[in-house]
Image (tube, rainbow, N blue to C red; front, side, top):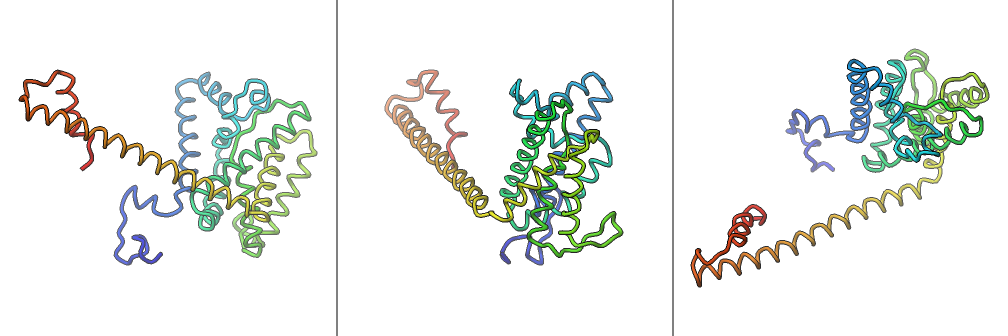
Amino acid sequence: MSERDYFRHDYEGRGVSAFWAFHRATKGLLVAILAMTVLLLLVRSVSRTAHVALVRALALDPYAVIEEFKLWQLVTGALLHGGLFHLLFNALGLWFFGRTVEDRLGPRRMLLFCLGATLCASFAYIAWSLARQTVTPMLGFSGALMGILVLVAVWYPNTSVLLFFVIPVRLWVLVVVLIGMDVLMTLQADSDVAHTAHLGGALFGWITARHGGWFARLGALWASGAARARRTRERHREREEVDLRSEVDRILDKVNREGLGSLNDKEKRFLKDAGSRLRP
C-alpha cells in the first residue's frame, strides 16, 4: 500500500486525476446525480413539456415497468430528485457514509452494492404500489442510501453522528429510528414519500452486512469475469496482430521481388493502414 503514488510524501496530484484518486465510486455517483439534476434544469428552462416527458421516462413508474417493460426505470429513478432538500439530504448522506462503504468494499463492490440496494428498493416500492393500486412514480437515491446507512450501522454501530447537525446520537439508534418511522409512515395512506423503498434498501443493507459472504463472492465473480474478458480481448488482439504482420510480410516480400508497382490498390491501402494498427 505504501508504494502507491497517493501515499507518497512527494505525491502532488492535480486536476481531474487528483479528484478521482480517492473514493471514485462515491464521487462518480454524486457526479451522476448532480449531472442529472443539471440536465433536468436545462431541459425545464427550454421546455416544460420536454421536462415532464423526460421525468416520466426516467422516474420509477411501477405500471410502466410491469406493463411496458421500462426496466431502466428500476435504476434511473434513483438519479432523479424532487427538490433541493431531497437532493441535498441524499447527496450529503452518500458523501458521509458512502465513503465508509467504499473504503471497506472497494469501488467496484461499492457500485455493485448500490445497484443491489437500488433494485431492492425499487422492487419493494413496485410490490407495495401494486398491492395498494397506486400509480405515483418514485424518484430519489433514498432507498440505496438507507441500505448504505444500515450497512455502516451494522459495521460500526457506536459511531457518533449529529442528528440535524446538532444532536449527537449513536448511528445504530439513528437507523432504528429511521426504519421505525418508515414502517409507521408506510401504513399511512396519505404519505407521499416512498417509505417502502427505504425499507427495501435497508433490507438489502442488512442482508449484505449479516450475510456478506455471498456479496463478496459475487464481487469476486464480477472481477474474475472482467479479468477473463480482458484476457480474451488481449488474445484476440494478439491473433489479429499475428495475421496482420503475416500479411504485411507477404506484401513486402512481393515488393522486394517485383517492385512497388506490382501492388494493387487494395494491397497499397492495406500497407498504408498497417503502420497505425501495428503496436510498437
